[in-house]
Image 1 (cartoon, helix red, strand yellow):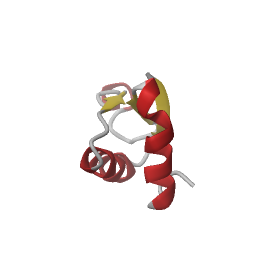
Image 2: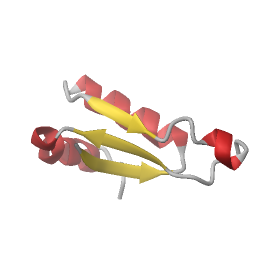
Image 3: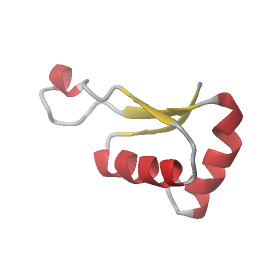
Amino acid sequence: MKELLRTTDPTIIAFATALLEGEGIAVFPLDVHMSILDGSIGVLPRRLMVADRDFFMARAVLRDNGVGE
């Protein structure tokens, strides 16, 4: 698995997940429940992971849609 995206904005994670799943790329979000540690203020970034074989295509999908620039 490779880290594709890291952000504190949950809307970007949701948007990127929808884009990638629409292209048939499996995604795995990490650090989703870390808000317990930061008191729900959103200072800890969340990560979006993809399989190594899907990394190149996933980067292209996000780049083409203006995510993670």
